[in-house]
Length: 151
Image (cartoon, rainbow, N blue to C red; front, side):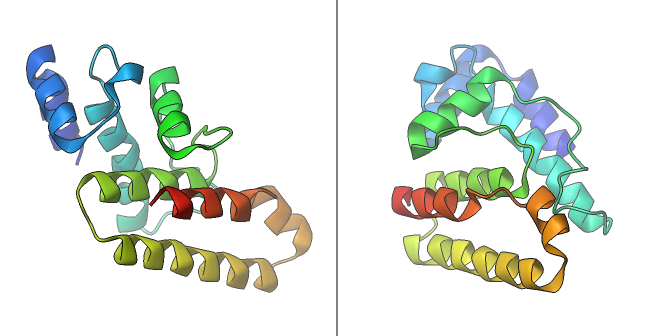
């Protein structure tokens, strides 16, 4: 995925704009058409953590600070109050956003969101509350409802 992100970053501005328009990225937040590859880089970090059995629930894998356009686009498109990529929920948001752009069925995306909710509840019930309150934000459920409504 890193090579794919790099390939996208090397494309001309016009070509990145064409690709962004073709898949439906909101260009009002992305004047330099960088979201197409910056989101891939964000997903690359998650993918690498999963592939190498690293911890993912607390986003230790994150290797970048998201740009303002990365956050603003998702906030505007989905209707979230904030996004900062400091919780696993924000990565779920990004995955679902891309799945929707790539025309994956609503049923599949909503099923993914429901499964994430089930896993989250299992995690909450299996660890001490003092731990789960650090790793899971209190508004995770409401954010997943907003995401589901967006889909």
